[in-house]
Image (cartoon, rainbow, N blue to C red; front, top):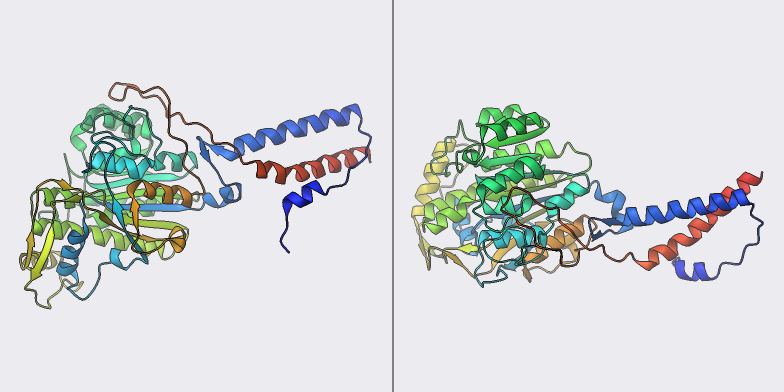
Length: 464
């Protein structure tokens, strides 16, 4: 028979004991201390915490990987180029997969800002807004929650780190194009430990000096990145964005996989765990141009980064891995192919493999419906304990991705914020305000007999 804490509480026999005035003071002090521990130990930034998971959450990490603009056919295109028609990419081999709806608060077709906000905060917002709701109330992000739990955090992208997807996890603005304000928040408020991508042109020399004085190593090329083995890093490998895979200099510019590997190396040194978001941003840019070769190369590079992450997760079972997309771009349909059996291989040089991938992509027939985003669902693949009880091939919403992540940390989502809107394109930002969730009464009832026993023991010892 299992232990029933409620029957135990109400079957306790009354205890008769004479308690002196000094004992009374001690008991009152214990009660006050107990109350403070209950309140402070059970609520974190307005998010309900499962008490049983608090000690475990310090060991838990999340790697969220977003192929910007990546639809199901983008994955198929990359698969046919890299491994042929009879095999699967690394992301497709993860044990759980599903479909994700992506609509925003004000449109059936989302943009990257609203989609990233949905994943980062668990709430829908209007297109163009970053981690504020339609009324401009700031929304707490999964990265900020990870920071509140003492975890290290990182953001990696092949576009600028001020761009919509990475920015949604660390900034709060009403207009995604407020790059100067986003940069100010990165320097003065965000406190992200690892930042790797493009966007150097938005930083002033003064701001770069501030980052250095705050302990960040500044990296501008592949050699700089390799040389950093611990601590915080700001890697800016392009004035605006990192070069397309079609043009990337393999010697001087790091790949998305190399940036992912370095981010994991640095963040995993924190015994409290970490949160890392990795974006393959130029899948989207290539799809906007209806460039099938560009899409294929960027998707393969993204899949290589997934392999790097999977290598880590396979030896760290407390790390959750999610691979998904923010929206579909281009209305891509893969039609047919005229491919041979020649596949990219580790035996070739990087240049040889790139040439082979270009040739293979050019032998695949595709159609495009648009040069913009579409409302199509996008894929999601996952590895980790939260997926053990989830059904394959189901359809979820992009806000549910936040629920999965926060659940991995042992938390539940806060009520919808209702604070006064905060101006988000000025020079100051008010911290997020959330409403504390009600503390479950069953925890109080469970703790009462423990407190009673503690009081009895203390009084007994004092009378000896």
